[in-house]
Length: 415
Ligand code: SF4
Image (cartoon, rainbow, N blue to C red; front, side, top):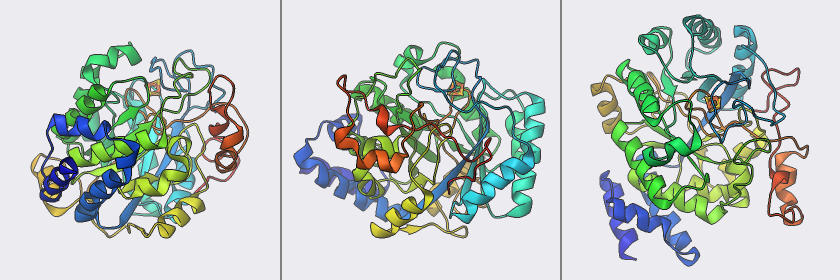
């Protein structure tokens, strides 16, 4: 297939494809899917080998958000039966983070719901980062607190943050359809503030919200132009009790095509499978590892993922290896670009990198992998029973489980 030969050659050289080529990836057929994955896999292995970076989410403050992001279970007016709690104490957050690091995570992502942090919130997160780094000085910390005001990124950088996550989520032209309390330009401004302060920029997207192929390509090219070091790809978790609860329109094949398109446009950037991995890729998750080089370990912000051990087993069984604390994530040339732009991120973890998702993180304007709705079956068991679970209206509420363990609960974290 000429298209895949062209994309592979460009990716191996670190070149970005044309917009038309990116759209063509999304238009490939199921018969071509394994060829698409194989081509994207060559590019992935060129820049990231067989390493998989593990990231661990700690939800510092859950629910009760005044923003109206339609995909989010923590939004204003959400009826999703998620955990709701205010700021964790630094030692509580550090305990949760420690579990993730012990499970193999190289990066901890500290997320709080809300439009953006107050200066007092920056103090709280500063104390939390100190508690985490006291226990493990090597761990990378990414912070996700929503829209940043002047000097807040600099304060986070000075306090030891390596990265800041704020997702663009969708294209500029459709942003007003998914949130009205802030704008696409607000989000771009925060990513630029973080980058300008020397934090590694982690910014990604959410697929499955009813967007067009053009919207997906637009946001992925925008992320490349913004210089995001890490691109979390979230697949919408349609929470009951949110406006997008009916949006079950992703298939595993569609998710793999989207991941491949993101990889071709970001050949040498960390591409992370974020929220919705278990819900939408299901038994195809291992194929996703051939394209992406990063995932979240364990649970998301408000929903549960598969068991942390299942993540580790999947990585090993698929022939990949967990990236170690001393290993560089980004290729050297990409790290140099980040450093030259004032970012510090990179390659060795010495200075940065982050990510989160529509259902993974969660904050103002940029949250990520949140989570699920109120049903009870563990995600893994739900996946096993999926053939029997689709309801008459096509909804798959059996695939989503609200997080009831880890941060903010008395139960041990999943890691
Ligand atoms: S994505 Fe973030 S800002 Fe938007 S509603 Fe959810 S927690 Fe609030």
